[in-house]
Image 1 (spheres, rainbow, N blue to C red):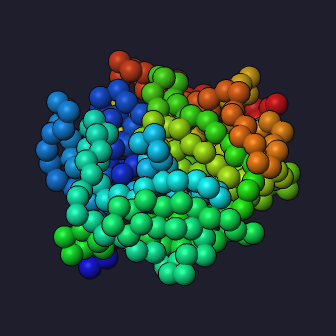
Image 2: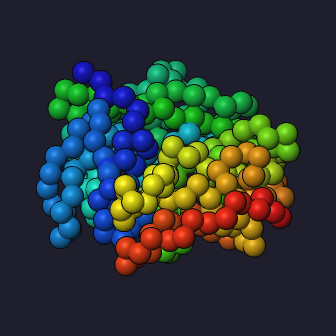
Length: 278
């Protein structure tokens, strides 16, 4: 039996409802990986998963589609508590990749440790972890050396927004890259230097359609960045600093999603249409 690559969508849905009720960044989960009621770290929630994730050397879950030569990650099968975001690793997992010849990197099949190799163009594969007779899969990609953009997605209450999908556009409005934020809202994107603006995939964030129907959770489809307010599409993306291949560019400001409720649960007045400037 194989569980598909669903971490970002499924966890996001489950984590949102529980966090939203507790004044957090907003998301609740169930899906092909299943969920079970329980408690973790003192907060009651659901154990979302199991699922395959990639973890950087600092122990943070990262988007495996943004690897570059030399990057090291460890693939793990885990569950995530929807209330506390505590991660529980499942032991006794074996790993394999569709990159059977190791063209794009080296995998330790016993530990899940992976080192990305040198590539001249983006190479995409599927990683699978087998735990207790069940396969859990996740797509990953190794990119050539490009510009790296880092940042942290938060909301207007100061909370991280887990699993927000940040998308990058060139001057023509065409998407040239994307990166899904981790549990702490942090992301790293490998993008070409032609990327000049960024926005979000609306479906990755619990959009506020009707505050009366969805109390205490959700976000408006706009975000603040620097002195501007923007919507989630390429026609109104926020500007990026100039990018250089082989260098890390940290966003000078945190993209801030406009929350529909305050921490105390009071409804926030809908923001005016995005000004799309500067």
